[in-house]
Image 1 (cartoon, rainbow, N blue to C red):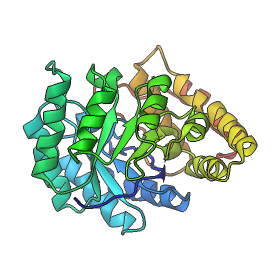
Image 2: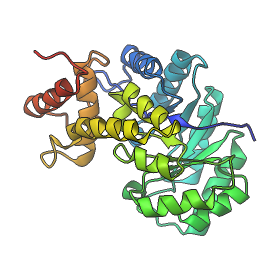
Image 3: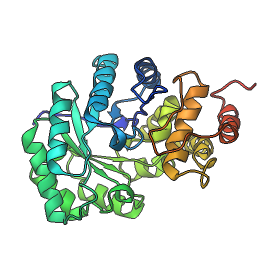
Amino acid sequence: MNQLSLHGIVPPVVTPLTEDMQIDAPSLRRVVRHLIDGGVHGLFILGSSSEVVFLDPARRADVIRIAVDEAAGRVPVIAGVIDTSTDRCVEHARQAHELGVDGLVLTAPFYARTSQTEIVDHFCYVRDAVDLPLIAYDIPVCVNIKLERDTLRALYERKAIVALKDSSGDDGNMRMVMRDFASHPDFAVLTGSEITVDYAMLGGAHGAVPGLANVDPAGYVRLYEAAKKGDWVAARAEQQRLIELFEIVFQAYPDVSRNASGVGAFKTAMQMMGIIAHRHMNRPNAVLSDVHAAKVRAIVEKSGLLQAG
């Protein structure tokens, strides 16, 4: 298996769209530059914050080509190959491999009900089809099933996965997973939470995959570096500042869905910062209204990332 040392801050990169719902290439290039200039350690394209399930293979390919080209080998690029069935995931994985990514990210299949045994098979089929490191993505809120600890251990023993992105929201279970893999330095655990990165690092996590890092990558890098040094006072202070910024994701909910409110807030802030041209969401997710956008602006201005006015 090709090797991948996954650590640090690996943002799940948003997918900027044009007014006609195509990939906004200039904006996506600015996003990649913004993240790399912020000091991130990798890029995760085609994940939840990327709105991957809305994108057809052609638009997925556009995202990969642009991100890989703009990153130019400066940081690893990992791509989600997430879909409802194993064969579709294999197709996405082959496409991503051909386009030059450094690793793949996979959830359990969704819509159809699957067992933990079938999930192990699902990962192994994808792993056997494409010779790239595979990262497990635990996000039961979206796929309606959890990657159990025994499943993760089985996948590791079968050399199917090299890391875990834990977006389960179950911090107790993630702590147990970190304990399970504490003696395996070749396996990385990264939290998908924006607001508990300091806790996760203290417990042994190797880094984080926070959607809010699209807005403030440098802040998360400062948090990670403070934690690596054992400066927990500084880490906590940076985490508290980022928690205040994270309030942007609540400004439109429940008027719109949680996804539109969350990812939509990231896009809205990034548009205000001049990083992306539009804050469009894939249909049917709603675009934040001007009223909601004004609330986001006030929080971003308070954070110091945007000039008032």
